Image 1 (cartoon, rainbow, N blue to C red):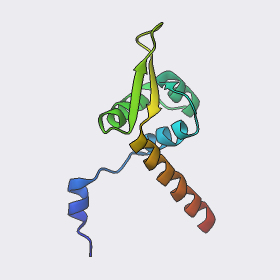
Image 2 (cartoon, rainbow, N blue to C red):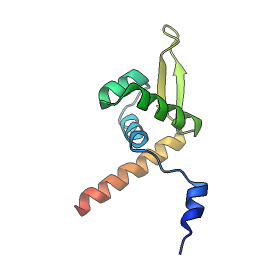
Image 3 (cartoon, one colour):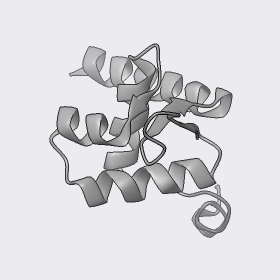
Length: 99
């Protein structure tokens, strides 16, 4: 049997907000501003900003600052983030099929 404490020590479960952000971004071809994410997803700006920052720190997202509006961050999936988003999509499909 797999030790659940090992998993808790070595892995972090993505929050629902983080999962939604990854799934949202995988459906978009270009970078998207944080404001666009929370407006489109109908989530609070704080929740999205915190989740985006965690995902950036973990290497699942990358960001670029706009030259015209340097405070505006454009968010992209990293290669690692894209792989996880693909897995989330596959899990959704499996759950949908079994319902």
